[in-house]
Image 1: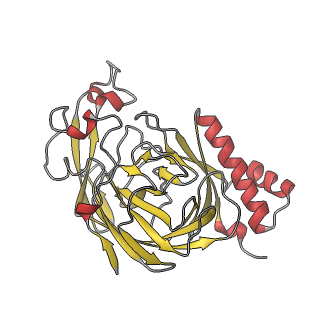
Image 2 (image 1 turned 60 degrees about the vertical axis):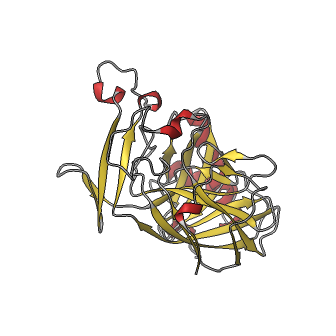
Image 3 (image 1 turned 180 degrees about the vertical axis):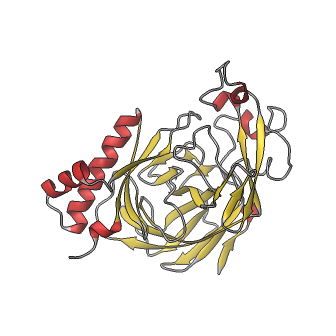
Length: 313
């Protein structure tokens, strides 16, 4: 299996002018050994982040969220959709979560002192559990934070780029077994992947999650249909249409509309049936994936419906 090694997975541009690192066939599995979101500065040394020891934050945009790519997939055409299947996410033995007060939603809150302190917490990956302490332990849930095709004509930062081509979306459903549908604007798709999290709460509240090194195994294939307004993801548990916008309610309304369009387009719902499903079905949910205040990131909201409602009758 072809692989991008970690030392070559430290790019910061989602850019179609970059020379492909790999060329693979449609449906051919390949892997990317991803670096953590701090470019290795924090997982490589168990020390709290400060402006002095986190040099990546001195740049604008920050040298954060490094990615491996581009990967050229033979048979993917410009102007088409591409399905990216996440086959496996192999986490490192541990990750880190770190607080940077300039990016914290409570960074100026005098009554919450921990929020305006730089700190780092190690997260151990114990088979099925993410472990911080005896109180702070929960199921491990590996996900890919940044997954993208190269944008149409512009180059975007791997840390703040977001669009129908993907980007830094931090979608919890981007996990093993999921199929992510993005727009391809160039021959070969030109795929990028990075920013793996061992676990993350909805919204990635204070700007980082369980930032981990990992090896991600994927494969890509062309998908039918006109270009999408935003990415979609299908997992064994649910389908999720995304909205990427500011303010938060605009992202939610966009996600809802795109889920209804998906139900009509692919699953044979009438417009009224799709409308009623979102209004009445208690299994329909909005999921806040990204609501951090870092750089110019927009909010990412998923409109999700369990797959049992889209199975053939």
